Length: 146
Figure 1 (cartoon, helix red, strand yellow):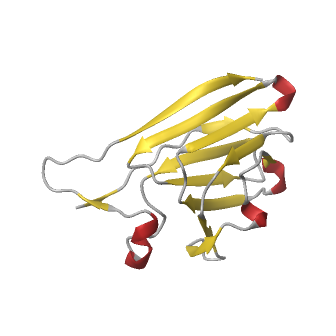
Figure 2: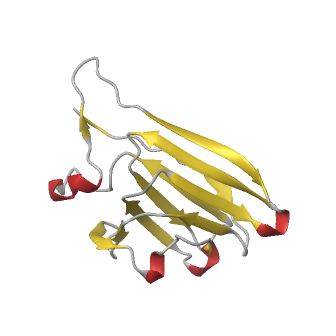
């Protein structure tokens, strides 16, 4: 049976919240809400340097080729959180709504809609598990004082 896992830490978002992570490709949904891609990460969605999340709201995109590290910072509170993931987590899904002061930085084991797009499996497949097999991944949230 095909399996995938994702963890969904919801975090507060202020107008100054900053996000930083590295990824190689992005899957952005079209008007039907299904992801399109993959596209190489370009300047509009480049987070290799800390970036205000307010600049991209609303956003709902999956980043493949993720290195397993992300940092969310709240400069006005002199703090942040490091998000790290390993094991089967190969992509980072970012959800930034424009109607709520939150964001979700989600380590995932597969890219969205890969069950219908097997040609995307190199970017994050579903896993075919046999009876008794497991799929593992670990996420750590570590507070940061700036």
